[in-house]
Amino acid sequence: MPPRKRKASKDSDSDDSGDSAFENSEAKAKPSQTKTKAKATAKAAPRKKRAAASDSKPTTDSNDAKTESTETDSKDPVTTTTTSTATATATATAKQKKSPAKKPPSTRNPALVTDSANDAPTDFRRRAEATNKWIGVHASAAGGAANAVHYALKVGAESFALFLGSQRQWERPPLTEEAVATFKKTAEEASFNKAHILPHGSYLINLGNPDAERRKKSLEAFVEDVSRCNRLGIELYNFHPGSTVGECTPEESIKLIAQAMNETIARVPNVILVVENMAGQGNVIGGKFQQLRDIIDLIDDKSRVGICLDTCHAFAAGYDIRTAEKFDAVMKEFDQVVGLQYLKAMHINDSMTDFKSGKDRHDHIGKGKIGIEAFRFIMNDDRFNGMPLILETPEDPKNEIALYRKEVAMLYSLVDTKEGDPVD
Ligand SMILES: [Zn+2]
Ligand SMILES: [Zn+2]
Image (cartoon, rainbow, N blue to C red; front, side, top):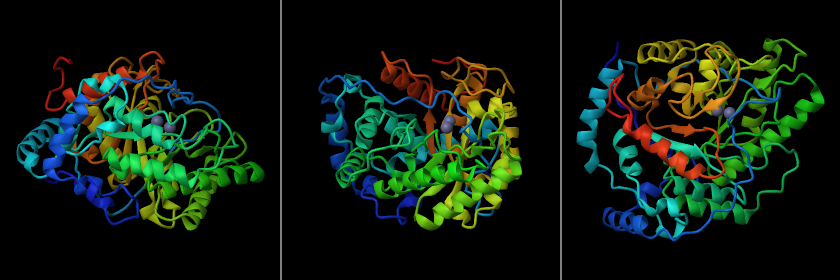
């Protein structure tokens, strides 16, 4: 086994890749300012009720329009490697000791913090920088993309997902230049790195539909979504690969999906198309790593494709991740079949349904059929460094932000703990 190496933060990867206003925001912060502002952020936080989010969360899977993801092969293995949790933990500990002086803590503009939840400051940023684990949440973008940034700030999230428009309607108001500017400014002020922002595609889109007219409609919506990412300076776009809708073979559907992705890549620059693995529902593509791989094989520009692994989906599709040993084996399989270098993001969800259920029902971390060890494994394994690790756990409209915040804290508390240790 190769020696374990901590993966370089994606922050640095993204610096040269676009003209996003906020890509280098962390580097711009001056150390002295940073400390002052961090304190101010902790105190400021005027209380204000957040408007109820009207958009729904990707907590359950759904229509047959959904897809599954694929895998990749390839050759630019990320610096991460696989090893035992114990080794990972040891390495992480050693690095944590060295790293703090390197990067200044990031600045967050206190004026942006508008929810009481942030009255109590978190040390999530410090933990994220020390561990290179960027825990985030699916944030409500009700009222505009910039509101997702505010939402993430209220949680204390270090990465976030959002929908780029209604995910249940084809018709969407255009994304205005003003909204783009506001989003970029807000994300920069909040010191989010664009590599840690992972928009989620519309559930209506099915690139694998053999019906030409329907597929065309999906493709146009897909291109629009990806262009929105590009305009917003976001470099990742996560989507469900598609479904045969029972009208063609999975192989045919996979070809159609890859064709649509290639066309989108030709039409829109910069954005990496991040295919999500699926729960193995009926006609849905992407339950098996091999299907993810088959999609990637057909993509002309491999630098524009990636994979987002959803833990709930993987478990439901028959990948047992309930212990560190089993999860490690699954990651080795992923590396062999798809290639770790394609892993760009994780969706961190427990599962309400049983192993191999083929059903997509997210549960709170440690409360479902997967259990806490899978998440402890993620928090102590370098293969998940530098990428958005997004919670999509079920919403409770009454105290969604507080619940998310608690889950983020709990996940960070798992760092440097061992299998079987009690959880806070
Ligand atoms: Zn999804
Ligand atoms: Zn997901």
